[in-house]
Amino acid sequence: MIDVRPFNSLGGADYGWLKARHHFSFANYYDPSRMGWGRLRVWNDDEIAAKSGFPPHPHADMEIITYVRTGAITHQDSMGNQGRTGAGDVQVMSAGTGVRHAEYNLEDELTTIFQIWIETDRPGAQPSWGAKPFPKADRSGKFQVLASGDAADEALPINADARVLGATLNAGETIRYPLKQGRRAYLVPAVGEVEVNGAVLKARDGAAIKDEAELVITAKADAELVMVDSL
Image 1 (cartoon, helix red, strand yellow):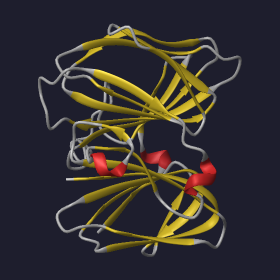
Image 2 (tube, helix red, strand yellow; image 1 turned 180 degrees about the vertical axis):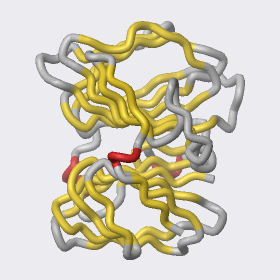
Image 3 (cartoon, rainbow, N blue to C red; image 1 turned 90 degrees about the horizontal axis):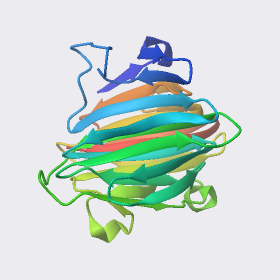
Image 4 (cartoon, helix red, strand yellow; image 1 turned 120 degrees about the vertical axis):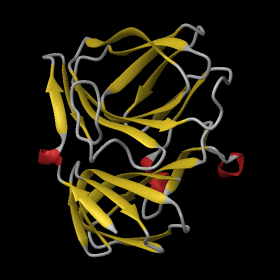
């Protein structure tokens, strides 16, 4: 089963400095049919104006992954962490017992991100933050694990039985991904256009996938993909 959610069907909000589109119910956007996808709770497609951002605010017991599409995001938190994450790279924050953080676009250009929230498997854990560069050449023609609850994946660690993956495909290239029984995938092309088991996804569309033993993904145009595999 593949349920395509076209970008123009997503919820959203425009605050001037922030233009947000929500794949799932979030803030003032509520759709009872889009409350999440398994343990995946939030997938926000955010455009953050230059010299602006999210002021300090709290979170608890959630795994928060930020994939930077263009520009850069600068993180600060109550644990004393600070860091800048650039385009194509990823940061993760396990909110655990509670943390306050801020995310600013300190650049002179628009920054675009995917922010992904996954329900934690370890409520009450010690909060943590980390970031890592992921050169796009390393995921050319294949999925690379960006964040994972499995240490064997050698990715950014999260406290959830989930994987966040990225890939880049040239037009005409195909990759295959086995989806284990009982698991779900949510796939979004950051750019480009792909066909997934016969379903076509354009840039920033979402595909909620389950009960498919294998995903066969073919690029109809050069594409950059982000996907979550979770329970």
